Length: 285
Image (tube, rainbow, N blue to C red; front, top):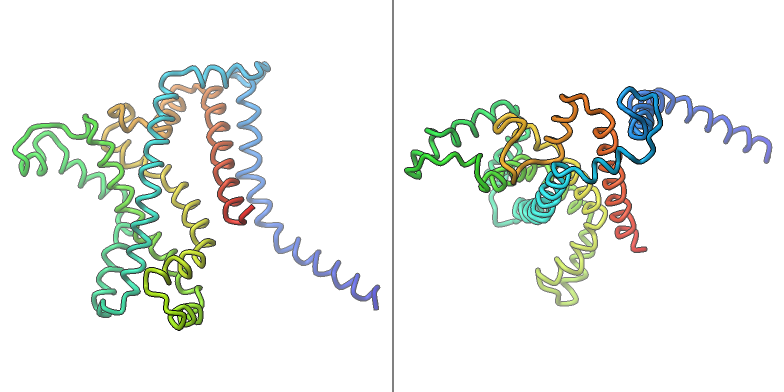
């Protein structure tokens, strides 16, 4: 009997590895192998032949443009993540409100999911019309100010990120809200808990797994807003929106591969550290 179970487990393991082989091969070839090569190039000179140790990391950390990009990126992430998580959760709760008619819910869903279907080029065209020197926004305000050349560009970028991602995150929150058992709300109501108490004692604890997924995806999506900033303001925008993505793009065009590889490894390590912290908080360790 034991031999039969052992053979069955081995057969299942072989079948599992067989099904995983294509995905593992793709991840190894297109993700792991390039990352290992990036780590190696971060420790060598430009041709990738001579070992230089941590010299590239030292050069990156001492670079003024890198420090500016890191500050702006941290500022951008710190402003966007709380606003996006809170706003998308509030939107998901509003969509579940009984007072909202079915047609209103459908309109809201369409309105907030529409930005996901709009190409980036169309968004860029809109921003160029609004923020051109003689654009529509300047006509409304009666000014000739180039907003993308001022500190206001940072808030424009935040608005773009929120507008683009709030609908997607609200769908994630909605799936988490659907997973909270209705029996918990009924028990809380029997105990005399009001809507606010039910939200803090039932809804929020039930949304912990969804919070982890939504936070990680939102964090990764903050690095995708670069396209809009780059196409509107170019490779060297105002200092308030000069992000790590701009720095990487400029170093890539300059073929400064050693510093580019070192900065990429530092960014990957920082992201892995943040995700590890979120995992520990989610597990309650």
